Length: 214
Image (cartoon, rainbow, N blue to C red; front, side, top):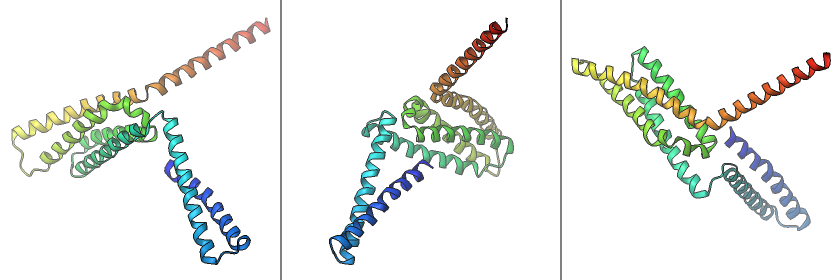
């Protein structure tokens, strides 16, 4: 949604510039239709690019990131996106409903972490353990389970491995929930502060109202 809005903002600013340049070039400067159109398009392109640069640097400033930091985070987010797709693909081949429910809950949490980090890249550093360890483990476990569960014949050893994998994924879900909590910890603390402040203000007002009635 944010990307769509920024594109619309660029177009919204570039289009009037293009029209203005064309009118001035064609009527005031008396250029030919095609020359005026060419200059107008160039002006719109430059305006679109300048607005893109401004939006990009405002985004970096808002998230307190350097260009190098953002490129590093964006590269890791792209890799995480591919891993999430691998996990989704693996889940499509699994038929056990109980395991699927647990796994889709885990996938929902993983996607939430990804979306939060994509929207606010500075949070990436709070979730480095998730991106460099826990996500890999979750994907590998899901792919391993998908491979073994689709085998036509399962030995007792294979059934034991599947059972252990189901248990490990439950543990992994708890671990990744903690990752999400850690990434959102600043927001949670801020919200708790606002709730405490609102409660304090409300109680103070009640005491003042009570005193006024006495």
